[in-house]
Amino acid sequence: MKNFLTGPTMVSEDVLSKLSIPVFGHHTREFKSLAEFLKRSLASIFDTDDPVFPFTCTVSAALEAALNNIVSDGVLVLSNGAFGERWAFAASQSDLKVYHLNFNWGMPFDPQSISQMIETNRPDTLVMVHGETSTGMLNPIAPIANILKDFPDILLVVDAVGTLGGVPLSMRDDRVDVLVGASQKCLALPPGIVPVGVSRRTFERCVKSRRQGYAFNFTLWHERWQNDETIATPAIPQMNAMAFQLQRILDDGLEKRWKRHSAMLELMKEWIGKNGFAWFAPQDLLLPTVSCIIPDGRRETIPIADRMRERGYLIDAGYGKLKNASLRIGHLGDWDVQDLEECLKTLSDVL
Ligand SMILES: Cc1ncc(COP(=O)(O)O)c(C=O)c1O
Image (cartoon, helix red, strand yellow):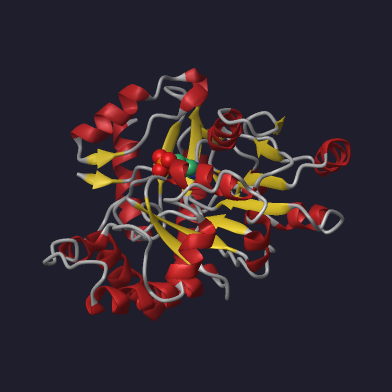
């Protein structure tokens, strides 16, 4: 079965083989050298001098942990799709003060409303999703970081789950304080490890929090991770596979990877024009890693995904309120233009 889901995506055989090493402990020399390599290579992928922690968990757990580590006066969550909405919901399940700017799905964020909301409520943290995979939309970070120049005390938390490794992204240049990535998307690794980059000034904020807890405590992690140690037993086989794949990605060059993802988006553009589909997201904000497309005539999409499965392809029939009304194709990770061409040829046949 060829996995063109939006994630977890296809993982190559040689990466999978790195999961089946004899397990060693996290207090060993072997682990220290693995941790040291991960520390350096994750910093290169995130383009940062700040620490990047490889948490063993889901993305939801890591994002929630970020909020618990840093928010004290209130958090502003921007949403224009399912994952932004999830972070507003997650924040609301605690005693945090939550301000939610809930734009329609697929609508770009409006800078004026954001500034107004900040002026009125003075949150100390802002959360946004860079690649909204429910709608196939890219939310550029620069305009939001620009607004925050007028509010320098606000920390910027970015869900880069759908973009890290597939789309140009720099924790340093984009002025991101907490960057939450994922293993199972553009890095083409199994799920289970969530790399989280944390800026130096974020640690100063952590001191004020009463909710840091233990397992994802940024301060404790920082103390140990700088010595290539962790505060609890991590997913060592997954970390081993991650080291192997990151080495390959960095040897190949990140820019080449970004270009390959853009080339797959170009192919999608050509294909949809000829096959009776429309984009859900605005044309100038399409996500190079995930396409969310709407069939004309309000056709149901679950039967299309089912027919694709019969022919050996996994694609997604829509998420949340777009379920059975859209197709989502994940052209990310280690897939290439030729692989996507074959998938789309099969999809044309099915249609
Ligand atoms: C953009 C984005 N954010 C967050 C998540 C949630 O990840 P998890 O299921 O690991 O909590 C996903 C999952 O697909 C996603 O695409």
